[in-house]
Length: 409
Image (cartoon, rainbow, N blue to C red):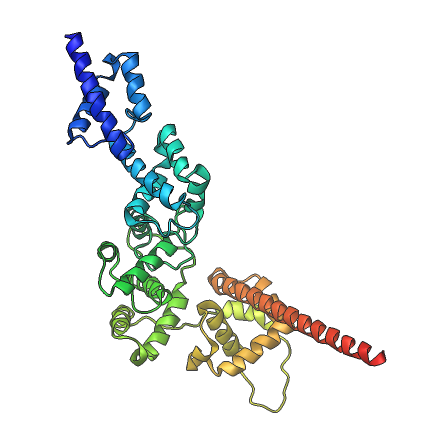
């Protein structure tokens, strides 16, 4: 019996040798005769003699790897490409590789931490070392796996209720904004809903609108302020306040005819929810006004029509709280040019600073905080403008000195 087994092993070994001469390895498919023989030898590897195992190892050191033989077969195919075209790299997003090889390598990169050390060593022979895997993972423009992107998209929708995500947004370390931007670009270039696009549409019907994502995000913000934030959802970072969204809706309603048909339908939906809701409101309470009157500078009579200072401050607060353009100031609050001029004057003489630091009733603290933030932003813009002007003057002065020096000489 042992003699018969030895004869059969020699016959099978000869077939394995011919397979190696033809294909360069022993990762044969199981459906072939050699593949079935090798599969049986792997199952009975413990019963092989030391000499028999060594004979197989001489033909192919990886004839019986501790991972699926299909993986080893794919590795040999990848090695053939590398021997002909050079090592692969992770930093260029695997561009230029055949589609089959790119897909296989992406799968290895995704599972790299779970691979056997021997598999990692074999990948390094292809050029895909641990360092190249890290380069691929950190490359900002690489395509993310669809499954990972969908998982994070579902989590974002479950948390915030929409997918109106701008490019810089990252969720739990995943660049969701970049991934969605790429998905939108691919669907638009395809000219039809892609399979991934259909899955994203099931999460948010307006994930890929034909208008700016910022507009769609404001629409969601306005809707939730008007209809209430559903249970289980939370506001996203940078979401606008109720006053800001009310003013935004007023602007969209005024320019309704210039909107796209889809935007018009969405605005009509919001207007039906906003029925009876004031698009602007008086903010200063009587008690707060009495506390602020001593803080205002004395009126300067220049012959013009005197302005109601409370109305002017209401106009300033409207812009500070809603972040709308001055030209969108409601007519009931007076001329926006007059309000803007008074803002500049009160900022320069310190009146706004005094108003921001004066204790006021609790009902006035919201607009006071908005005014404080708006004043600080105004100060930053003013300093940036002054710095830019100073750099320009220094550059002009340097050229003048250089020209003057040339004249003296």
